[in-house]
Image (tube, rainbow, N blue to C red):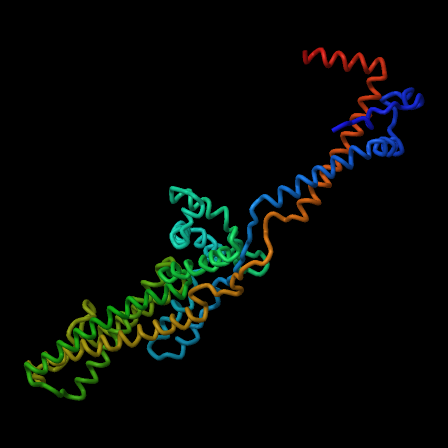
Length: 408
């Protein structure tokens, strides 16, 4: 590109000016005016190259889905447990929050876990799509094409997927959420979910014990022929079984509390004191303070041997019935809390097929390239004019020649 306009002869007044003299705005405008042809051609050429670039480069589309993570609300268990007879002692466990410093960050990390990324790579065949041979390379490419961001103000998680096919971009964004739901179904994330799983395991064990006790009682009835016992003995059996059940329920409560609290925790101390009081009452009823599960005192002179066997089996049935009832209440309350908090994320905005490209931004790119080219052309014109003025000055010319000599 010719730069004749830059090297036009300057007037004697301009030549007489020292290069160190102040540069006025009019001087700059005069130089730019003389070089307007060069500046215009350079700017238009750069803009034309930008147009070719944005037309040749493949277009990418970005689809975004917005989800709301489970809200860690205050548990309703304490209020409900206070209204349930025989189980109010467990309210401290139900109302105790295991807590997370920033629970929403956990969900963002789970979205970016290797398990979910591998599932996405296999589901959409991304190894072939990204032309990668190894799973690690496919995961890296997938991470470059997707973003998971947590909103600082609204707390919502936004999952964006970029692809050359707009429909495929929307499918990947929605599939990302679906794979997360599959993973979260196997994890206990929230405090209510952890309590539900704990009490569910305890309830299954209690039901198995109750079934075994009922079968044993049935065989005892068939072998002894005893079907009824004295009402006083039955009352004694039921009272003792209820006490034993409360002791075991209290021990289950302490086991759950010790998973997140220390021995100095006020709730733990209170529960231990209540457990000691229950054991003391059971020891008085059982006739010994060494074994709370010992046979209850029944006048053996009034109950035949077959009746004693029946009483033992009936005692076990009543005991496991009470245990199952108490733990079932805790299990149902934990399920209510889990439903209230939400065990999985909720989709706010489903990703739809984008109708505008996300890259390249054609208009913005062309304008930006043209602006940069205009600034560069103006700077070059001013620099060339300054060099011409320095060459006309003998002193500056000697310095320029000395600088050239150093490079030679």
